[in-house]
Image 1: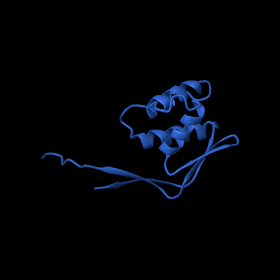
Image 2: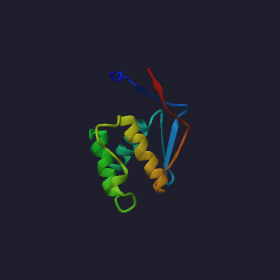
Image 3: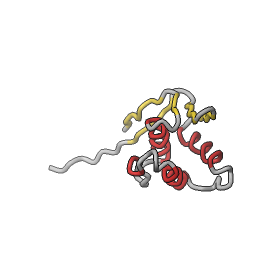
Image 4: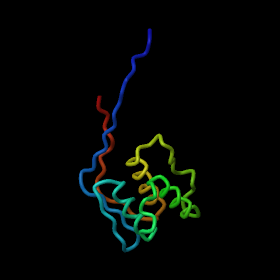
Length: 111
């Protein structure tokens, strides 16, 4: 008897705009990628806006290495950009290097 192949598709949805704060600075967006893109422009002073999301997150995690262990975030291609960006923001929030708010609806499985 063989095992059937099951295809699962994860759908991420946000019920409202997300807000991420670092000190007095606020970043808003409809997705975690939107917020990370805004952070990228701000933190890199707009000089490297073409830097891919994963490269920016690697750079940022290296900069935060004294506060967040690098092993805490998987930047492999196994995660979508949205899940990677959300994990990055949640890690920053967990370690007190920013504050994430806005309601996030956990991924649901659809067939």
